[in-house]
Length: 209
Length: 395
Image 1: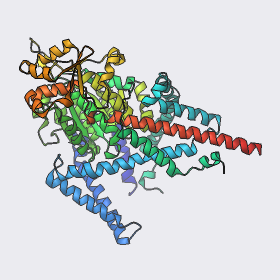
Image 2 (image 1 turned 90 degrees about the vertical axis):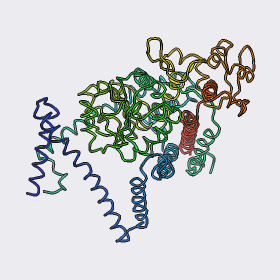
Image 3 (image 1 turned 180 degrees about the horizontal axis):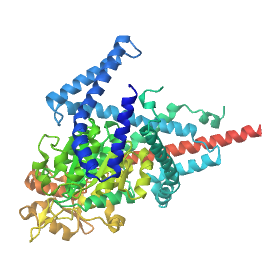
């Protein structure tokens, strides 16, 4: 029963969505989608948020209780969570309030710093790993250099043809491989969806039989 | 250990120092550089520009990112909002992420400071945060009716009562969405809104994600794309050359002709103007303080302020048949005498772009140097690798 009911929900839900995507019948488009699904989706969204907050809080509470590695940082989570929530609820989220001040002066610089560090890792990795060890690696290396140069004003000053060459690399060889991968992923998705709908694929139930 | 062996084993901290300097120095000392505009950016610009001054057209900006990708995506958002406010284009905004809410507010506040006439609910409308779980019903629902799908805006006002909604019902009018994202951008719009309602979809993505979006761009499913900081820099340039362009003497605000038709400031997109050398003075990112006029242009300009002719003549200088006014030489008292409008108009003629409207282009200078440094490192590493390999083979 524990497996049958979830399986039935998935199969019936799948069939309904299949019908909604392929049929213009009033039952699927109006009765199912607008009258049934839309109000339920709106009602469920806040619960999904609540579930996330509860789950995150439980995880950090357990971490503190168990004195797990780096458990002290969990206090920062609770401090940040409580202060941000109060700032938003009490002072609003508009400019001039504490919430916006925290966003502009804490969240933005910290997040940007984390993302910017990527440039340093990429430069270091490019230097250490980008070697013309084989013909394929040489082609990749040349393509990367051309595209990198064409992206910046200095590169265009070196040769006015660089943007055209770079665009060709992006439009032709890049897209040929990209489309191959995407077609493969698409067919894989369809196959997995069918397997889930037919009850063949059950790993989402937690594994095992 | 010889030189090439040494550089093969170069400590990564040296690379970090060089990359840091390559980024910091061009940011501190900006120089004028030109970003060649590409078709994906131009197409998006032209599509948005075609909505100029129309009550029955609007675009929707979807802020599907958090603060981490702001260095690349925020300049795009600012440039597009500036374009919309300059050319009197109605714009809507929403986000699927809680972190996107403050980014929308920050973007509006950044641009709106320069456009005091722009009003919330009239010229733009912020739907604010809509949970991602409601993305599909919202995207599909807006295809039928916007105000019944998104009932209130971020300020809690009924959307159907807002003046901006007067001529807007669904995707027939709200005819373009631009989604900004650091990951998979625009897919929900592409899967649900484009096939069913024919909505035009476009994206602004970080540079590393741009290659992923090319298949949709080439197939025409995306009508345009802003790729990374370069895309933002290109858009900034287009806004300066076309949307924010003012002929000397032309009014700052929209005017009406004899038949009551609104005349929108700026000018329409043209590849010829873009290729012309005259456009270069509009895209300089270093500080400019001198307004340069031909005698005819100067006359046209001062005719707008007949009571201030003497003052303009007092502050002007002549050089090579051109009339120059260096705004740095204008005293505080003269500024007061000129008044807000005349001073603002004159300042605008210097083509001095505010810092916030050239962030991406300044960033592209740093990116230029960083790219060159990385390429040099790669070349150096490869030279060392081959020399070492040759020596090993010889031994």
